[in-house]
Length: 278
Image (tube, rainbow, N blue to C red; front, side, top):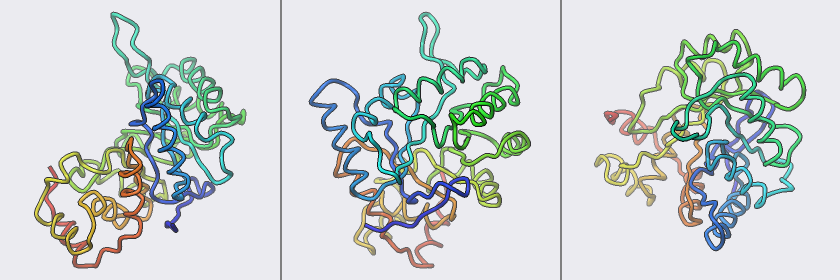
């Protein structure tokens, strides 16, 4: 299956429909075997961008991907995220951008993913209690040391993105965005103007299957599902858009990847553009 591509950071060429690994169960077999099968099927289908994070099972998701896919195909990019501390009762999980903490999580990610360099490392959230420059300088030092290839951000505003770009080369932004939730429209536009990859998390709104009549109508016209139409609209919305839909089943995975083959007409795009986001 041939999918359109994008170069993250101008270097990392990936297919534009990726895979979000968060929903993969990391429990013992048989659930683990099913999760491994989904990850391997994603690669078989031509997916070359897989998104994970230290937060997902506190490293267990990274370990699962390594078990499923290592040694990795040359064209596969596994992006991970750091910057959230696990719960330490009575304290809950919390954003943590202390340089020593970020360095430790990067080292853990390298070990769990069994790699010498994290080609795309994203800051899961900006810690408001730590100067942004301190957080990004810590990651840049690791980049200079060869442990990080490219650096991205997650859940940022336009102002935060602009500030970060004064400190580092931002390769990607991962904000929530979909056809029914366009809160971060301005961030997407800023990324498009700068050629920064935009990885929308929750690219398929949970309510999309029961959403507007317009989505249902376009899906019927194309012989597709509402989820596929949602992903196709994202791909049309901007050339820097790299959806990373997640699932724990092969059926849904194949449905999501198949969205890359949908071609929306200009009229269909206009009708979807006019949907009032929730």
